[in-house]
Image (cartoon, rainbow, N blue to C red):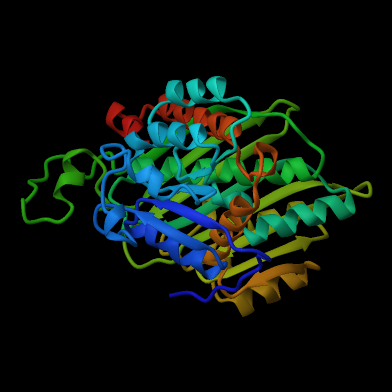
Length: 390
């Protein structure tokens, strides 16, 4: 259990649909923010009268009528019908990504309900590191020119490697988009190229035991049995280029997340550096010789598979801070619960939202992000099964 504090000056009644592993995190976070939560779920409902499939038992909607906000954390196939049920009743809605199982269905909702108060949980846009970067852009006039992003992720709890790869990279898209917006730069990005080296030979010639807990995943080519890597290059409408790199290891490594934005501030070069570790968040500004800094410490190729290095910097926070300070770094934000603060910020914003413009990631914008994801799948040559699971 992680510690939360309430930053809301009122209580909202929220209907949470789905209370599996991630739904439980939503519930705990909402309650930690001071909201009353009605859980509609076949197994983990807060009231026996709510223990059902809401689409098969529509009477349940009348039992939660006083909930002004809906939080949908159910199977992908149920997202669209639950969104429509909520919109008919005038609810503010947050839905776990993806918005629907298909771009066509999401676009139909966007066209049918152009002003719908629907947000999609791309939580990186509410990450404390990203919020710190946004604030820096607003105060200093920093303008990013190009970006690099990288992550190392432990796949132990995740079997569907291709899908996890793409989901994470779309998180990166949303993160950089929100920072650009704070810097006064608008526009969309297009995927130029995508390449993945992810478990393609993991099952070749290997007999899979039915007792293997990863057997089902291995049969579909998603086995977490070897390290995998992915690269995606994207270009923005204004010509700014972004590179996204992911290294995915099998067991026991921490989740690591780094982004860099090269740009100008007061006419001089600057590097905006953000880093999110499991249980910690940090953002820093790097001044000085950027090309030397990149060459010595930030070479994407130097990310160690073992997870002991990220861009050549030790995971140990004290050592990392010392290296950053040598280059004139200034820490912008750090949180003890960094892993969960993004979700807390997202849900807090969601419960305050009264219209689409106040949601961190409204449905039309989520559609654009997901479209980038599908396109990256396509040009990377991902199997059809991986796309259908997105």
